[in-house]
Length: 320
Image (cartoon, rainbow, N blue to C red):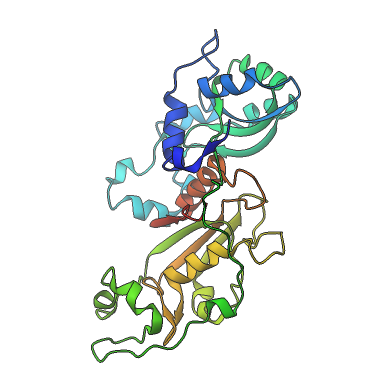
């Protein structure tokens, strides 16, 4: 089942919905949305499916004394802002049991992503494979991976080039310590210049940016930002580079525009609110697909970024 973007607010809402949806199958494992989808498929048709496990296997022994090595020091320090020292780690930090994953692979399912937070994995599986997976004793629940397609009235994609990122000069004012150029209007909307005048440019903050890819990272507006990229990963094509494989300038255009708006720095042309921050870049949307938004890509990205120690994330869905 494919859902238009306007019918889901954010991926996390979809995740909560699928976890709380009433079961459909007689044995109580098959979720409503997956069940509805399977009714209309033949036995060999592929469906994107969440498989949730009932426990964490061998890691259950660690649930009362979770190893600190499972979470980075940076992540633990961030958690300590809102948690006591004794509660920095919890059950969701324990990994998914690998032997459970292996059994699904043995049945022919193709693993896409795993989630330690929800204790499960997303797979591509046929209806007959889903039937077999449902009968496994360690499987607690199965549900559809939520997706969103482009709406016909969506904003048309725009090509990206170095020239399109070059702004026209604009006179600065004597009240500003930085020359924002044409970007002054947008940063004034959220009172950024007043914050910048105090010397706060986002230093010490890690921002996660999840989008459809990032091209032109060699553009001059990113000259200082490039040295502050903490990590990158493409959760669509499973590679470190976040530039889409498709060479078309349309692919990955929105991500680079979003990133430049956040952290670009070229005095007189563009200065972003957080040009002093560090960044984690994740490609989570697939422009090549009829359903670019797939929640398991986003969930894998947020768990990965959290493990690194991200402070705040940006997920831009407005271009769909």
